[in-house]
View 1 (spheres, helix red, strand yellow):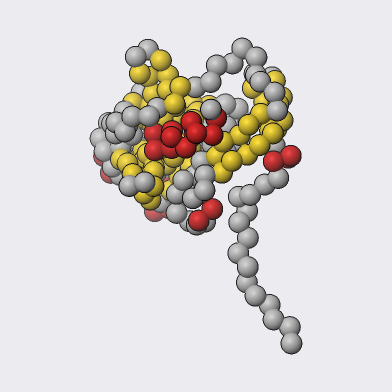
View 2: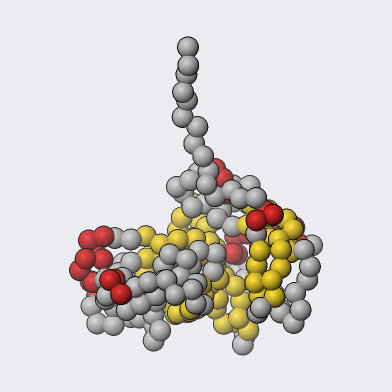
Length: 210
């Protein structure tokens, strides 16, 4: 008798030897990869969506970002950075991938997601319209001057805020939620994005990199 059993495959695992990073023209191979122990628990919860990469050799003239360890991110003005698709928010048909680093502003409207060590793991922002309040999903409806939302290709990018004249990393792009009904009415306005909350994981990070 032949029995075929369904075995879920977690597509998020990769061979570390396939990874290369480029920093200001410097191409560096990855030596080690550490996934957070809770990362592979579920394919759907986006819980503990964080990893640490060790490079084969040090980078020259590039300073590491300061990590935020304070649980005070709510209502912070932030800047997100990534290589995702871009285009006019009210014209989804013109949005496309350009393989260029882009950045935009937003505000941490809500802290949510699954819990780790009793703390919520996601920073959540919505994409507010300049005049339409029906696009506001959470927090203030007033957009930042360069209000934006993440898109395909931004995953893993950093979310930064200014603290005492210094940029600090407070989030890592985990994904976005697309409301199709809202998309048909207002384009990308009214959509939400989620960032892994760095402050919850600084202890785990510091234990590995020391």
